[in-house]
Amino acid sequence: METWSRMNCDPIKTAIPHRGPMLLLDEIVEQTQDSIICRKTFRENEFFFQGHYPDFPIVPGVILCESAMQAGAVLLSSQLNGHRGVPVATRMNDVKFRKMVLPGDTVEIHVKLTERLADAFFLKAKMMSGSDVVVRFEFACTLAPRPAPPEKEMA
Image 1 (cartoon, helix red, strand yellow):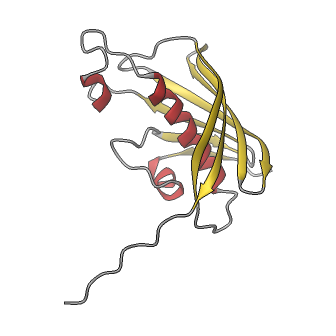
Image 2: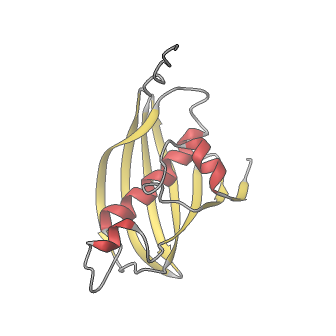
């Protein structure tokens, strides 16, 4: 089993189409064939803090889930073997929020692929802040066709 560790943001940008401000992963800490650990520090200037409880900013739960699903998409990209599809979420189950994430907090995102049926992928996610579980859930995704790049006009 091959393991990758301590990668910066470049492999993430190669693996998934997300870009700022919606790229919600900072680095890949470790990756195997069926699991990945990523890290994200939520900085005070993140776009969502402007309106999500401005007097007491917290990371929205949907952003936490999106971070985990992006980690899952990075994991799946290694299994797609040149397939032009991009993983998109189809469901989330048993979402449990355990602890608030505040500006300046760093979380570690653990995602494990539990099953694959053709182009349907089933995963489990757990996000940690230190030794505390922040959120835990199961999710599924499928491959959506990636649109062809626009043709350039000749002048």
